[in-house]
Image (tube, rainbow, N blue to C red; front, side, top):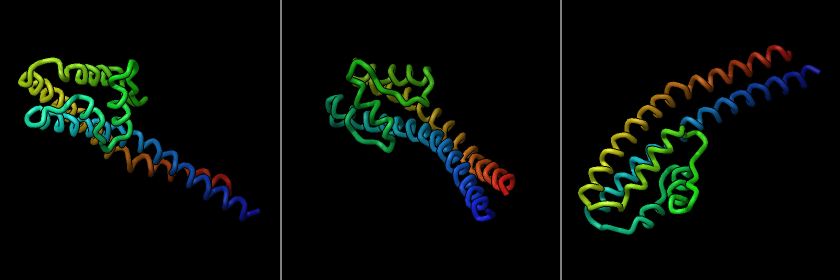
Length: 154
């Protein structure tokens, strides 16, 4: 009977840490999304200055965020797909950014992209700070709550 309780207790610790890690990963994905947008701005700025590629080419580039890749690839469709963790304000900001691309002369586009890039950097830094503060906390809380269940089971 003791072995069964021991297994249940260890399983509770592992499960609680896994749940905490998953919550931490959501925050990490938020950071990766906006960091990818900063990288996208860099690609657009580089492209506006030199190559002048079609917008479809830029929207199909791959970034380190699967969610961002999905958003960019669905931009030309009627329904843009955003991840659930974005706020409505963040979604509107991204829509505003994407709809300005290719709508004016090169100099105006460069100014717009630089302005949006600054905003994305600000948001990305906030998300990264939140991730670094909460990542270890979530894992520790998960371990402690699992340990508490372990003690209660035994």
